[in-house]
Length: 313
Ligand code: UDP
Image (cartoon, rainbow, N blue to C red; front, side, top):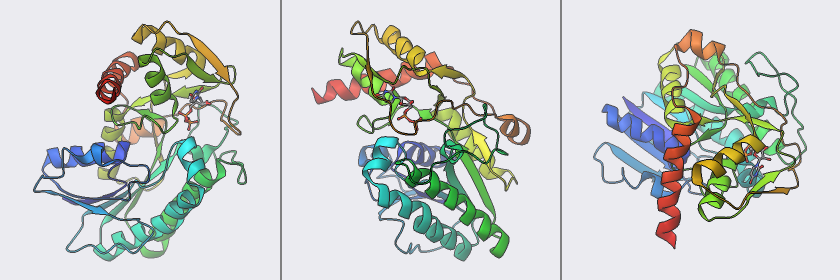
């Protein structure tokens, strides 16, 4: 296959590029590096089946030759980064999705949109299934991401309905692993970085809010299965193992042997109280469920960050 990945230098995009290259596909990655990093694709840059284009995907995408699939993963995705780049986030969800759909249509390619659990906002039901319409504050600081992705889903289905584009939508829940950006403010790189440096972990609020963390290789497997399925409507991909942020902080301190403890910080505006995917559809339609346990995934992630942080010292 010849596959284009927007956001190919991000956490998930770069792991997808690795996966497709290892499988024998040809991959074109597009990224403008506002939140992605050249380090994430350094292992691929000289590969004969890999091509990188540095570009903002809100501009017209000019690609030579055929494409079998377009995977649209470009977007700031952590609360800190989409708050820092609010207009770029709205533009990449809106204009970027339009360009990526247009490219897929012109090439007769399949289109897969990376959507998010943030479409559910601060959910009033838990776990969240795909039939839930969400509880989103459109004008709060997170609205730039949530609404961009909700618009992106609407655009994707509009292309499907109006142009018969062959589309897929994955709703991605919290994902972690090697290549998480150390400075993007997400809880996994924050806590692991703090623990490795021997600092107290910064729990926001009282830590009773929950998240469910999926290791990146499980996520990639789910996305590939969705891409290869016939499912047009959104599918949640994430790990249903829900934990409070306080318990999560205690786990990181115990896995790293960090003695500095925990400090409490103010809670960000509109921070969702609960987040846990209902993965019934992924199980039944794709035969997918996560395999990597939290301890195993965290150990790999801690090893990656230790090397990175010690390399910088
Ligand atoms: N969080 C925290 N300390 C940090 C960073 C995040 O307690 O240093 C909390 C944050 O308030 C949220 C959860 O961890 O409840 C997950 O935050 P993250 O930024 O990883 O992404 P989100 O799941 O909110 O998109």
